[in-house]
Image (cartoon, rainbow, N blue to C red):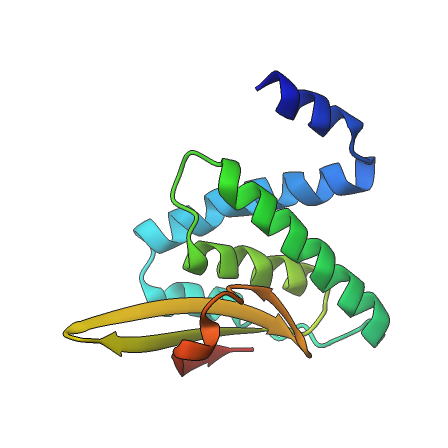
Length: 142
């Protein structure tokens, strides 16, 4: 705990603000997935913002979002798996008016159906990159 606090205090204010935003949105994402029907939070995520930034700035934002989401997902006491991480990333990218796509995919193994969610912006996979190629996309939110 002390080591993590020291690390937190040594990061830049910019990094801290990314982490704060990801932390707050992780709680929001958990509440959405737990209490709100899927159809309703799809509407929230699919708000058309349009890409107002150049490609380099959106790429930089995507990388920062990926780092913040990955760090926060490991530390929060509530569930923050692929769907919640994808929601966090999508909300953060929407807030920055950078285009991104949230993808839901499925994979059938033996008698089980497994789901996975990931977000990408242009060629950068922001969250859920691990194993995404073994899933068949069934739904996208842009």
